[in-house]
Image (tube, rainbow, N blue to C red; front, side, top):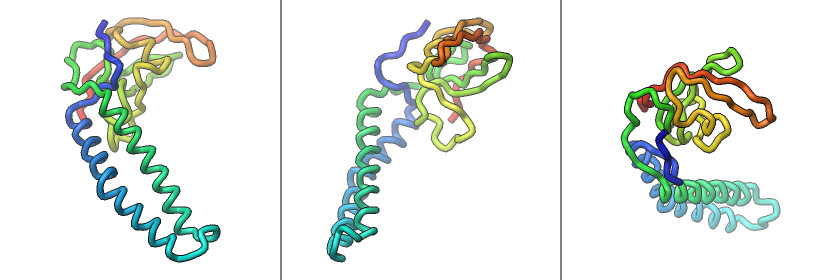
Length: 163
C-alpha cells in the first residue's frame, strides 16, 4: 500500500497552472480589485454603493482563493502520474462497483481535473477515498458511509489520470 505524505498529490502541470494562477491573483488581481474599490469609494456614500460592496465581496473571494492556493502549493506533493499497475492511489481514475452501481472518479485533488467537470473527485482523506486507497483492481473492500451504513466495494479498474 503506498502512502501519501500530508500534502495533496498534484501533477507537475497542475502545480504549474495553480502557481501561475496564484501569481496572477497576488499581483495584477490584487491591484485591479484595489483600484475598483478605490474608484467605487470615490463615488460617495458607501452604504448605498453597490459597486463598492460588490468589489469588496469579490476581494474577499479572491483572498480566500489566494489562501487556498498558497496552502495547497506549500504542501503539495508534485509528481508524475502513478504507474499503471492497478493500485488505487492519488492520480488514478478509479472505477468501482458500489451497491450494485458502477461509479468512476479521480482519486486525488479537484485541482488536478481542471476543466473536467464530468469527473467526480474524491480525496484520500474522504471516507470513500480512504476506504479504497491502496487496494488493487479485483479487491473487495468494506466502505462505511458517513451515515454509518456499510457497503461492499469492488475495484473494477484503476488507471492513471491523463489530464
